[in-house]
Length: 419
Ligand SMILES: Cc1ncc(COP(=O)(O)O)c(C=O)c1O
Image (tube, rainbow, N blue to C red; front, side, top):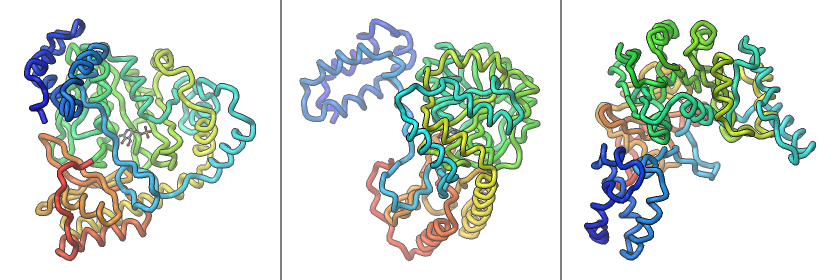
């Protein structure tokens, strides 16, 4: 394919044509030219002539954006007959109170703007967690909150540190910001080395998903408190899965001014499709983050639905316990089949088989109507992450894997690209 690309263009792409940001392009020319080559493969497939317009539009784009790959979300097939265990959604429908609240808003009408601060939700969640509303900021999913945090605290050229393997979005957010990324590798037992809390001059933000994804493992809050005391920048504890664990860092927000806790309603409240998340932090920090967010980042339906969801404590507790029971079953079954599975405190497990390739398992399950997440972390290894589904879904998934391991299931021919 690259044969279609005139060689001179490939050279020009290495920074010579960019009036702005030359330095940053040149600082990593290998990565940049590789990325452009990939773009070129895409655009130059049939028509060399397009190279002119390609060069033109590239000049409009910030070099950091051209150089990055962009976050790739998990597969989201829109057919509902797939057993979907790939993006840690809740397999149960949300509280009926959510539908009722959304219906009320629809009946009232959508012609007015929503409350920019989602005050109704902040008041309710504040009561539940023991914080005044001005310690809380709401977002369009917790991803929105993570974006707001990065934009608030990280200047271009600053460093963003995160634990690796972890949630891949942290690196993407840093790249968008023109910041440097500093992954700190988990040890093989999913503990973190002391360097994770090492204060360095350019360090502006540290992210930790706790429980972590993909491992499901948990760092004890006492250890996190020690790190926060050492660091000279905000430490973000991404607690998207904390409702499935028996410990969290909410109390640290009161104790330590640099701790920010981020929560999601996508998993434990079964509202991935509604998009709602929030941050808990000192009011001084929340005030700064508020300047950065979109004026109406949460819509009227999501504010009403999220408030109703957190108000239904019985639904929450029943569903949470069902997921925790499912997690125990899934962990036990996968270990019985010979997988290495760390103890999970989330609504998924991380599974590595010593003999069978993770990619083969993923593909075989997919061709049998079960979607799990194949994840490869260069420098660490790969595996499959399986969301805790209903009892029945877990049984179907485990039976398929067992058949595959026993050679009773045809494995699909490798087709190269894994989404
Ligand atoms: C660790 C972690 N943080 C944040 C999110 C984003 O969740 P939300 O749906 O609230 O944007 C995810 C989603 O999978 C996640 O795994």
